[in-house]
Image (cartoon, rainbow, N blue to C red; front, top):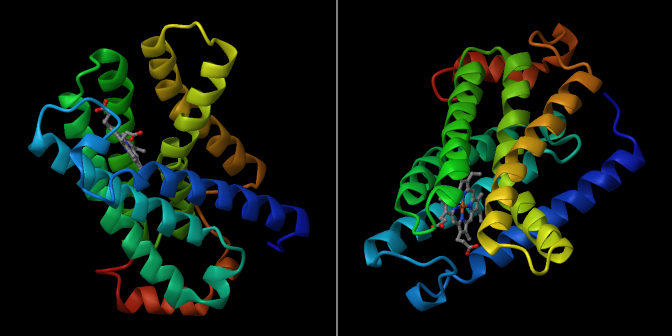
Length: 227
Ligand code: HEM
C-alpha cells in the first residue's frame, strides 16, 4: 500500500510525541536515585523491579515506533527483523515486571486493577505476535503487532489522559482521575487499533504479493527465531 504524505506526516508527529513522552517518563529513573521515583515504593527491591520495567518499556516503545516507519519492512527488512526481536525482548520482561509492580502498588485497586489487566494483555499480544511470525502467518502477525503496540503506547496515552482529566477536573479526586486514565489508556487504544485494522482491510491472510521475498524466504530459513 502506497504511503500518502498526510499519512506519513501523521505517523511522524505521533511517533515524535510517543518518543518524547516516553523519554520524559523514563528520565527520572536514569540516575537510579530512589528519591526521584514518582510512585510511592515499598523499598529498594520494588524500586529495582520498577526501574527494570521502565527501561525495558522504554526500549519497547522506541523499537515499536521504528516498525511503523513507512517502507522500513520493504526497504530494510533486516532492520525490521532486528527491531522486531528487540521489541519482543523488551515487551516480554517489561509486561511481566509491570504485572509484579501492579501487585506491589501502594495505591490499591485503582492502580493495580487496570495495570494488571493491561500487563496481561500486553504479554499475551506479544506471545501471539511472536508465535504468528514464527509460523509465518504474516497477516495475523500484523494484526497482533498493531494490537500489541496499541497496548505498548498505553504508557503514553495514559499520561495524556491523566493531564487532560486533571485539567478538566482540577478539584477532582486524584486517585479516581489516575484510575480512569489507566483504564482509558488502553481501552481507547485497543478500540482505535481495531478500527485501524478494519478500515485498512487487514485480514488474517496476507495476499501473496504482500509477502516480499526478502521477508518470506528469510523467515523460512530462520523460522525458529523470527520476530
Ligand atoms: C503498557 C503496559 C504497561 C503496564 C501494564 C505498566 C505497568 C506499570 C506499573 C504497575 C507501574 C507502577 C505503578 C505504581 O506503583 O503505582 C508502572 C510505572 C511506570 N511505568 Fe509502566 N507499564 C506499562 C508500560 C510502560 C512503558 C512502555 C513505559 C515506558 C517508559 C513505562 C514507564 C513507566 C514509568 C516511568 C513508571 C513510573 C511512574 C511514573 O514515573 O510516572 N511503562 N507501570
